[in-house]
Length: 256
Image (cartoon, rainbow, N blue to C red):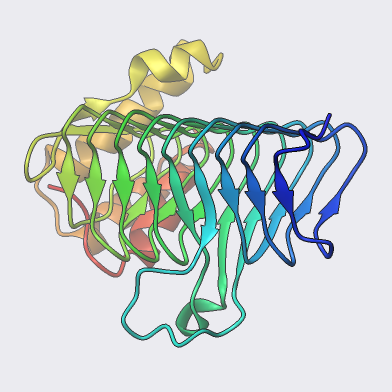
């Protein structure tokens, strides 16, 4: 399972069933869970932990130093969950001391070719990042979010659960849950109805989520007033809580 042409540091920990292709480089401090495939010419380094049954394709760079001028060689980490697919030339960087020292990627995600995940990002589960989607430092991406090809998120932005970014989206603001955005800069275009249906949300729930969207975007309320009205919908649709929690904790403001 381990090609003899691979270079693996003696301190790296590889569980049973890990396969490593030719000319891959696995550095000191790396830990890889059982069943994970590491493709040829992949580089994995630093204090990087990769869970079980992941597939890392050729030429990916996983756990490299953060691209941050403040970084001075501190021991920081990259943590990756289970069953992720990391495609060719993806670059996933470790964290910095300024934000807990860790970049964290959940499970069941698809990171396509040339995706960039910068230092201190937090990516949830079931996320799709299409080709060349890029995250600046400290970006948080919620569960089931989809980022179209060449999407760019400015540092410290948040991208909510079940949201959808069209191809070429550029954002320097937070994107609320369920919302579809597109453009440069990003603008809202309704909710991600099709994605919600595919995830077995009932039509009644989708309608309630749409009501929440209209409160935020159609009534032109200031956010505090929008939150007040959203709370009135909670008894009818618990999913509205996602909007409320997101808006109450947004620091950059939301896409409008």
